[in-house]
Image 1 (cartoon, rainbow, N blue to C red):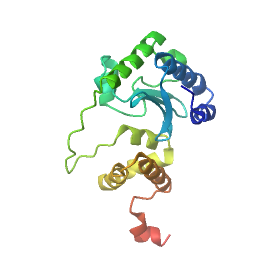
Image 2: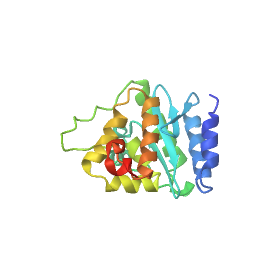
Image 3: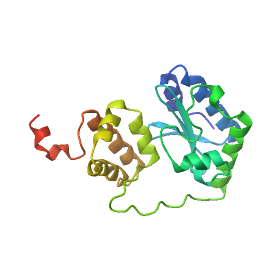
Length: 206
């Protein structure tokens, strides 16, 4: 399959240390899955085969690589990391190619992910969120973690302020709308604004 120029652009804009890591991972994905399709989801490269399969991201000091169905895969490390999603991804903090598992192991992961999609196996739906419980989807948390100002604001929010943003993003009916709302949320949080700042006197008078 042809490669997506948007991912070339993403890699070229990444930090110098990250570029060889991303190039190597991309090569392995295509090696294991020649029919893979490349896209950008949530502002990050995504690789699809009969649905979402895996993706990577580059940050200031590290990279991540993860699988959409890691919780269903056989490797104990992937299953463990899938239970505690954060900006480290399923392979942990990657700062050089030396931090990656062997090519053979990564190729095995990718083929296992392909098999799950071939068989149409789906990740079980998350349990209903209770009134006082806030669950932040990994893809949203990853994007917030990429912006220091937005992350600092988000951490300072009360649980209700956090929930207002997360619910607003999650309630979008299309991925395009979700991404648009997430981008807007990051911009507002950079400015220290809660979701409903437009209705708050301190912001209206500023």
